[in-house]
Amino acid sequence: MKPNLKLKIDIKQDVANAQDRFWHSARYNSPFNWFFPKNFRYILSDNFSNKERDKIISEYSKNFYQVNKDEVTAGFAQVKKQWQKEESRFYKIVGKLFKGHSWPKVKYTGYVSIFNMFPRNSKEKYFYFPYDGKKLLPTKTIAHEMLHFIFFDFIGRKYGADQNTEFAGKNPRYVWRVSETFNNIIENWRPYKKIFGLEKESKPYPGCEKMFQAMKKQWAKSQDIDKFLDKWLLVKNKTT
Picture 1 (tube, rainbow, N blue to C red):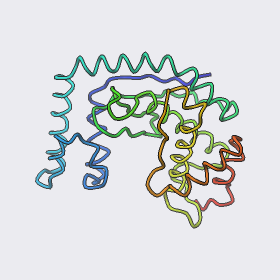
Picture 2: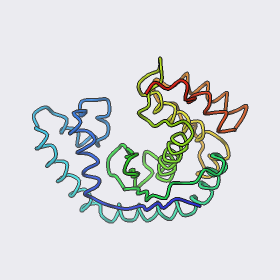
Picture 3: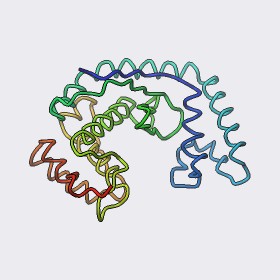
């Protein structure tokens, strides 16, 4: 059974994507400043208040969608068409990977974004994806986030863990690192790469290089999801 996933264009949602994730969490001076297009990074200036930034982001986004309406609409239509071609194979391989683990009966939503980063809201079950392939392959981005959703549901049921669970002696973001590195490994797995016609290797996140190499060797020996994740997420190591 495949999940209930809808892909949408929603300008208000994309505005919130920029406003809430960065300004309201006081992270606009973080390394994530590349979230914004280069011609819009003037907004990083300390000369603006959060209220002013919110207004500027809203106006910038509305104007972009209006000026580039045809391009965004056409790109979105192409992404939907391509995803329809690939989703069956994606869900099939994910089903085998997680040994028939069923998708939660919830609604998932993917929103188009005009920005340069495509975050996921694990609680509300939505994420963002590009409407063109200039920097990232849209359907790969969609699959990446859906893979996260099934991963966290799987480890929640089996290990009682989520992305905020901490493990003794590990980085506070350990589970997040495991999830991202796991995705890297699967995205480099030949059967998976064939679905999206991927050629380049998915690289590990900064700080996850050693984990990536260890998982890579482990996956090459055995593709058993239980044995694979037991090594990284056994409950006995959990501290919270």
